[in-house]
Image (cartoon, rainbow, N blue to C red; front, top):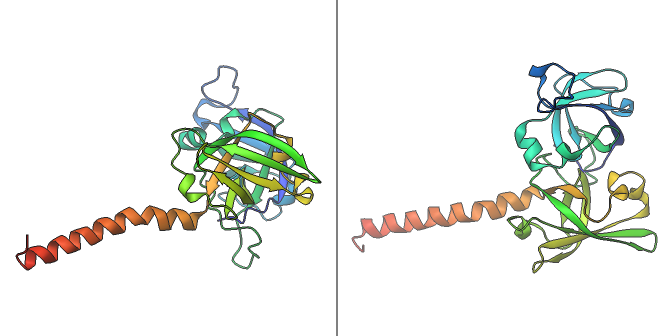
Length: 228
């Protein structure tokens, strides 16, 4: 689990894509990132630890004083924007939360639900307003509530508006956060990773299951009474 408070911005220093003929790493290694400039988050690192990279929970397979390596499964590549990254790109990083951590953001699983596209970016005083649009096939909008939380590239942010007609939503990035997130460097047309609030997922996602259970119980009781 993560808080959505980005600890450090690191850099992709090496990518091994087994589908690319230009890859020089071992063929059985799978799709991997080596992420460098990461020493501030590696002081207590162990093999098998979880680190959120742009909002995706990834497992550390190797590390040294300044870098760590992670594997990206096909599911991760299909759900996120990580497969679009290039050597030199910056990524938001956060270690898994500890039991005594202050939950200053909101609870994130590091399970990216989808991506969204930036459709507007504008300055508003010393803040920046962003508007994002979900893919047409997305079913996430019911979980996105004005003044609720959302994870964008791993950062816990507050929703300022939701436009159900166009399937879009907005956030405001305050000046304090602008130097701490990769989002500041992104513009219209760029994609970001989205994780909706886990509480909403469990509540709304359980509704249909509860309705089905109630219907079956009612039907059972009516049959017992000979009414159907």
